[in-house]
Amino acid sequence: MVKKMMEQRNIADSGTACKITAENSLKLSLPDWARDGQYRFTGDLRPCMQSPRRIVKAGIVKPDYAQHPNGVSFSEQSDRASNTSIRIYNETELEGIRHACRMGREVLDEGSKALRVGVTTDEIDRVVHEACMERDCYPSPLNYYNFPKSVCTSVNEVICHGIPDYREVEDGDIVNIDVTTYTGGYHGDLNETFLVGKKCDDDSKRLVRTAYNCLKSALDMVEPGTLYRDLGTSIHKTAVKQNCSVVKTYCGHGIGELFHTSPNIPHYHKNKAKGKMKVGHVFTVEPMINLGVSKDCTWDDRWTAVTIDGKRSAQFEHTVVVTENGLEVMTARDDLGGGERPVAVMPEW
Image 1 (cartoon, rainbow, N blue to C red):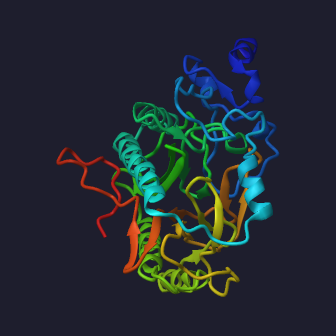
Image 2: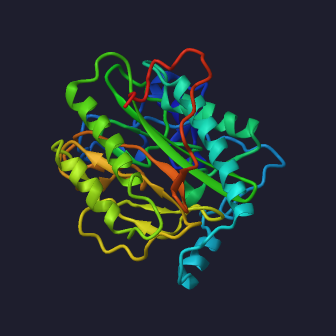
Image 3: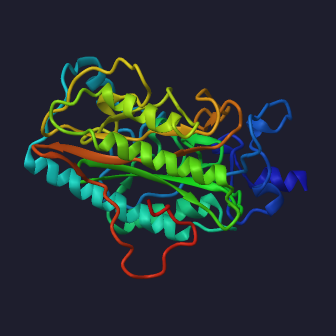
């Protein structure tokens, strides 16, 4: 049995991936980095094996990091080294970003329809990947600094950057689906957290509601002249009223031709973010809110960020542009077309 499992393992992914046709005992096993029994997880969630990386169809325009062996974005590195101001996009460029954001919205809605008790996050990744291919979009997370999947799926105590795998979603889980699409030379980025099944406890519902309201409180402030650092204060006040905390390690960011650029937008109180909003600025706001303390750590897969105390975390994200009268939410959620809503729904707040 051990020999057969080793033969099925995808060696190229360093003991983290196996074929979809592999036996369940292998698919549900821990990846190599966690297999020796010495790794200390902060909560109850455990990783499983992943499927092999999915193929991007020919003809889709790719960002510069897509085929780099280490997933390096030289355009982002150059931007960080030389950029001294926040880019102002013109209307033609904004149309390109709007299209990327509309595609991202459609892709996230497709992923959310597939989310339910018993589905694997790998299946969510398949749905998202295929939805991107159908729309001639590149899934921006794929190979970004070697991230192995087309979407981030963050379950329960995972704050962000969760890697889809063969674990089945359980009744009572909360799952964040984070989608970014690249098309026409622009990225569009958004995410939502979903309550799965019928067994989500009151704390989980309070957490998800608070994360949503934290995003809303920040977006209510977006208009020309607002200091970027002030968004964190609004988010902080909203979170602490519900006995939640705000993650400090990860922040919102400028987006457009680059996946990540200026401005940086911390979500916590008394941050030192520079700059104030001007018409044509495009950025994400994506506060990560915890039930327990704000501190985080990262699994040895080098991606999965989890709460240090193992308590749950939730997040919502939009890409926005500053306008003369306030903002345009470029990734706004549309009605799901009159069909059945997914079993795992974003709360109607």
